[in-house]
Length: 126
Image 1 (cartoon, rainbow, N blue to C red):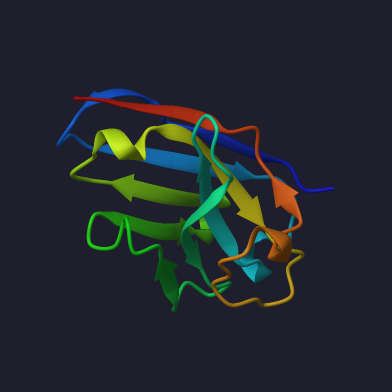
Image 2 (cartoon, rainbow, N blue to C red):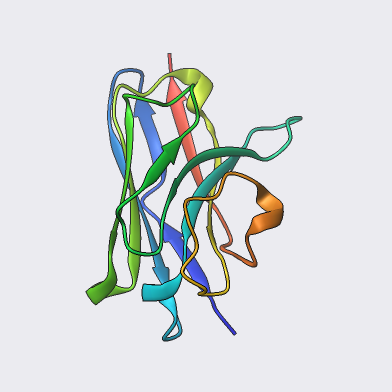
């Protein structure tokens, strides 16, 4: 069973930056595609960013392209989301997700992931 734990959320002013971390348990991390999703009150969970199992390919939602960067460190079993130029519209609970370790590509649909973290709150003030 894979467990994911997000950290790094908090309160930040518009235009500021945060870096989220997702620490994964298990030995299949290096074979897993990873993703970040977010959910604001009253909204559906939406795709933010994803990275392929080997870190060679990434995908981003149009709303965050050019501002957010996803990366991974297999030695630490950790995936990161660097968030720059934050906007109030970015406020949400951010969730880390992993697939089942089958050398997956960067995936954009919630149904393509098998494991989810508990979420970390990001609040951007205007």
